[in-house]
Image 1 (cartoon, rainbow, N blue to C red):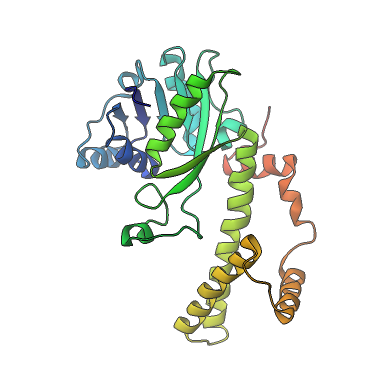
Image 2 (image 1 turned 60 degrees about the vertical axis):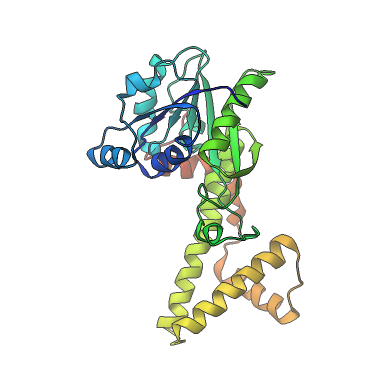
Length: 286
């Protein structure tokens, strides 16, 4: 898409604000950067970008990116949504606030959410820069999962959103479109409640092997990292079957560590429960 878009980044000096701004700055789009914290302003200016007041930044913008923490989205959206031009896209980076109904709304403003998948553990990397980019948005390609509440048949608005999404998370392999609820079921339930928790559990197990069992740390780390790769390849790609002995040990691990009712986390009420906790709410009200 060759059209020059007007884009505003609110919270441009934060972690994600800096990441998406770095990529947007390299385009021919007109981008304005808003930030109100002293440290954030210093980071924006150090990157060679000019800080613009929020009201000025969003005026006439085609897409407004809210790169602010989840807990600030309600207040920030309430401030900027009344200032947006009709047909503007309000783009957030996490689905929690959108799913919980915390974002300020207008009938003539389109809400969208886009969350990066981060480079896959199975990504075929070829350069040192790709190997170093574990988060994505720099050198290693990644997918993005997004949701948009555009009117049915409004291809142009979705195309505009995808243009900005592909730019700010570049390099992007594919953008997968889902509903806001489905995106919330992926993030946090699938990837934070499960995958990130398992990652933290692996780190704790490594420390137990080293601190409690007395295994030399390099040996334990090498064994864990290699077998984590094999475990993921075997379970998620079917690359090789596990041995019979390994299957027995896996059953013992499930019996010892995993609760029988763990799949309840995929129920709607449990999704509401974890999002309410993440957003510091008593409960999710819709």
